[in-house]
Amino acid sequence: MTVEKLLRDLSVVCTKYQDEHLRNLTCKRIQCDEIWSFCRAKDKNVPTEKQGQFGFGSVWTWVAIDADNKLAVSWLVGDRGAATAFALMDDLASRLAHRVQLTTDGHRVYLDAVENAFGSDVDYSMLVKLYGADREKEATYSPAQCIGCRNVNIVGNPDPKHISTSFVERQNLTMRMGMRRFTRLTNAFFKKIENHVAMVAIHFMYYNFGRIHKTLRITPAMAAGLTDHVWSLEEIAKLAD
Image (cartoon, rainbow, N blue to C red; front, top):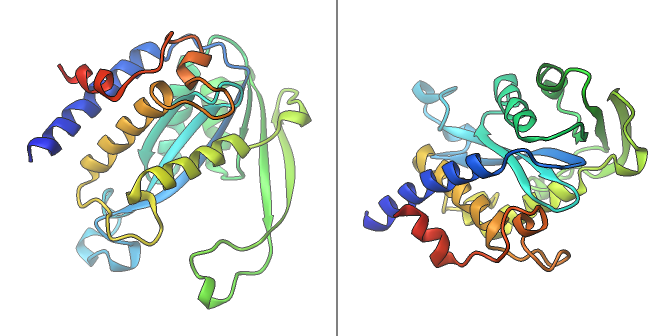
């Protein structure tokens, strides 16, 4: 319980630190995506009286990442509905210094959320993936085969060369590989949504400030000019003081 309390306390200060310092960012290209996980139980096993209640069943982590310096600019844990999309886009818009090119997947809730947060002051496009028939039963946990993509320009004049969600999807893989609770077949899932949110907050603090990106050879925060060194785990933990 002592360690659990330390991690919850640390998640609060990690969230606060990044909320204060990830401001007035000079990003040029932003990619957004959502990654699935679950809490307490998968949807089919959620008790009837708890169905539809946040924290029971599917939980989605929404992420906005800078395609150039790989900085996780904004993230939010919630459901996959419009309210979460609006909250993410409002937060993202508040952190940017100027107009950006924005790419999301084809999730339709992004349309109104982006318009509400940015208006016409954005170059926004959707990358809609086209899938083939569902896989056989033995591959239930594998997605259907992607047979192509379609670019849909929504607002402004997005550069076709940079209409992509590859970097944010790669960051999703980092989450799945680095946090056991994001594995699709796992018995390590959280029983409390508060602990799940705390884990995500600490992950992004380490991802932005403490983890050297193999391509950049520095951390995303260093590439973005937010710090001049790689943060150690000790330095991150001391934020809780």
